[in-house]
Image (tube, rainbow, N blue to C red; front, side):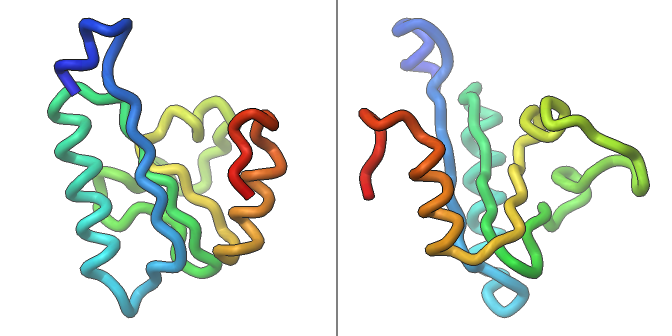
Length: 106
């Protein structure tokens, strides 16, 4: 993360976790642990968690701070965990459709 600073800013990292629900807590905790490590190293890192039932961050560190508070899209995009309530393949197709054509992989 620090090496990238000489190239115009911090390293940008996206951790994409798809379908890791309550039965695969080791995947969820590993994703959040990796996110912690990248953030501590100075990276601009986000965990994108796609799950139809449990898309939110697990630890208090990554939970929304105030229950019932209204958040704007910009507020949510600033959080380190981007929660997407959806199914894996369907969500990947929607993400792909929203990306510029030169970045599309599907």
